[in-house]
Length: 138
Length: 358
Image (cartoon, rainbow over all chains, first blue to last red):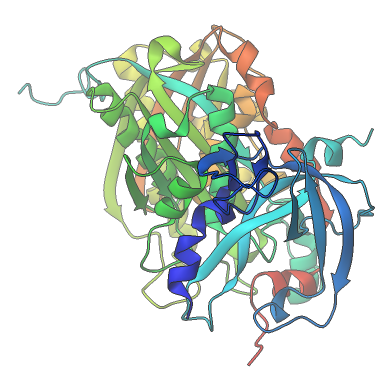
């Protein structure tokens, strides 16, 4: 049971809320309160657009505990438009070829149960190929 | 207080209310009804729809509502923190106890100065939340309120409902009529205790009264609410450009529309059940998003929901000029319907948690 941790991370997980450095304007995700670019305090909340592209990816067939029921699934490094690199699952990708450089957007999905079926449902960000491009490939 | 009579039965807010923004959501997986028939009737059963939408393994009413709500807010261009209510109507909330609405309110950025609550009235929970939002804004307690109808409905394997119990719904940000893309001109609700469909606590699948779900439930309540609203407003079917009725299957809304005097053309754009199934609390509401996606300023729409148990909410709307600049700000209902991945019964059984894993 990790209730306090899930609760503490809810804003960044549900809505990709990070921070912006008031000194050098670097966008930070995950939020860490100290800017890794200029070393000064950075506590201003910043809503990321959720847009980015696949930087690299791999598909998991032997899933770790808690993720068995959704295997196989693809995990990717996503380069966000604003700069940071985040690790997340890709979703809604069946039947489509994911490639390095595929444009993606953030969606909030169910990640897993905390423990068994009696535990907390954990929600958070995943990324999918941008909807409009799913509809009409360009 | 004046006694309620056919002339003054309408629910009148103290100030006019309208739709600021709307958003649809349909998951991408589709189970053809022929697959259900293949498994249980050797392919011999008549099919009530073509196919139904099925939620993915990582989707539920909370996640689907978040996406629909984000679409509604994007169209409205209203900050989520200005919405003073997030109300989610569903019969498939992810928790038995713990609100879906707090998850959604947190995810869209509407917390903490907000009312949040989950509504339950079978397929009418979404429009019930909408009527409450009309009252909330109409009284002046709030300027904006978000009402959502969303479901990932359950159907017992081999039951008639397994063919149709789909997934999807819509979110509406309501606000003052003068800023809206559609004014909600009139509202009326008709409710009785009619036991046509229910699910007891701890039961996985619902029970229904077979043909009893038709005449005394669906048809009685929808015709009563729609007719009472038209009588009180002195309107007739030809005064409306579009109509959308709750759609548990293809036949019921077609028949009730004909009974009330509406044409096939008037209900065509909002009749989505053949291609996404019955989305329960989302069914009438997502029919309305499909209409708003194509409606022109000045056109009138009649929305009539139905919830088992039983009741019906009727609303008359008129589209405003604002529709033209707002509707392209978010994906349209048909965009979600078009991103279709067909699945077989085995994949469906896995996605719906019907496989025993331990």
